[in-house]
Image (cartoon, rainbow, N blue to C red):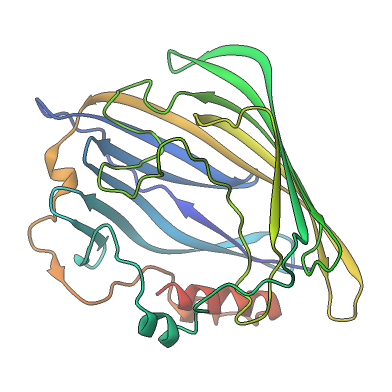
Length: 315
């Protein structure tokens, strides 16, 4: 089965220096090993900028992949202004929205078809998620900082009455402390105006495909070892996922996802990186994805059509 792929493509901007504006610039590659996308991120204490392109790859009959790219984009967040901006650098247009974003109201959730409350299949847990964190004891220097080798295993185990399928993954990564480069800058890109977790409390990530009003599994979490809170400079996650097909058969899909920081610099940043360039026009909507016409040059199979529809949703 030929499947399309999606990724982010780097928009290269030089690490411009300007006096008295300390910050961090880094380039990150992420994706499947043969289809890595890139993004460039600039961070200061109360603001950030990310440069990227959306893109899709279509598998052709001869096995090669045809890349289709969207416009060059930038996202700027300014805590001091209480605003976030999205820029289409090709059309010189941008949008502006309040930041941090406000939660949806009841009427807004209803208009979007979002459930007002979570419906579980049972009052008892129907899905166990086991997370095991192991410090491998190895250390090495990356970009001049000492990184620790940590392996995290995650298993999703359906219990009685579960509607989810089993999954498991192993993340093999090298971490540094998120504030080790600059105590005022979080490499996780969390800004002072972002919502903060209550002191002394930890949360667990649990992602589900939107099921509308259908009941979902109630998860229980079992953790072994101290969860890693650092920033990964190199990471490889291998996953095994089981899916149910319409005829009731089960299929297993194996995948690998890599993240690696290829450039990490600390130094002065040009303040104009966080400003709207002269001549840009404020609009209600910017184009973020490749035009739909780019997919119409050749017949598409079912999965390729799904990819196009997903791209339209993100507009």
